[in-house]
Image (cartoon, rainbow, N blue to C red):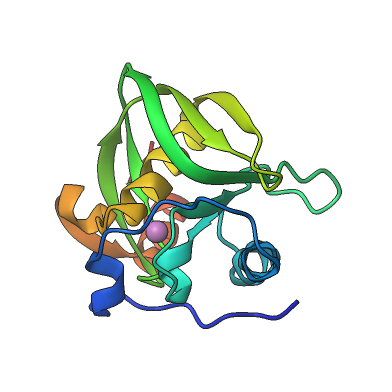
Length: 171
Ligand code: NI
């Protein structure tokens, strides 16, 4: 396994539509392992293949935020089949480090995907996991969350400072 270089906003690979995956290969299996390693190393909760320069429909997600109790999901060819409700909150992306912006997302989603064994499954999610599924699925269509941000992008440092002062509640 190895860390892969995370492409940053402005890199044209992040604006392209990714290709459907038909077959699991050793190369793809390694890509998925590397994506998890790269995501955990960068402290993210999700990473999509184009973010490491690969135009294939696969993303990895783990919103548990716990090394002892990880909740890793591999989503190959993901398709959101239900999206309802609404949540509004700050969102960031490993391809735009240090920044966040307010984005409205559905609060409840069901996604249909293949796992790393190419077996179909459905994942039902709310809250942060639902947000991550929407965010990562968008990456596979060349979309970045910045297109959905209401208002200005903020620096994470300012956000943390504002929270500590009790001036702003990010949720
Ligand atoms: Ni992202």
